[in-house]
Image (cartoon, rainbow, N blue to C red; front, side, top):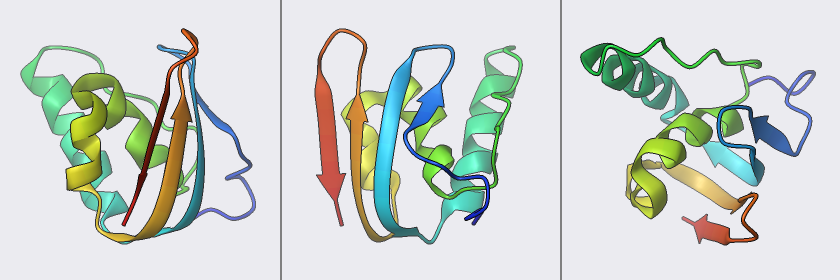
Length: 93
């Protein structure tokens, strides 16, 4: 959690996706680790998180898995991601 630096919307620089989130994602540390592991397996540099916010943990996984990311989240939350193409993804617990 990073209430001092987790100002929203959070932006994913590689895709320009913007995320807003309310609630808490309990497994955010595992999600960050998963994102790093997936990048390593693909020989890609790891995503550089800009905050310690649980919200930001969703962005690199959404970029890789799309809507499937909803099934990875554990917590009490509502998440909305706006894509630069005008598309919107929303999910909740």
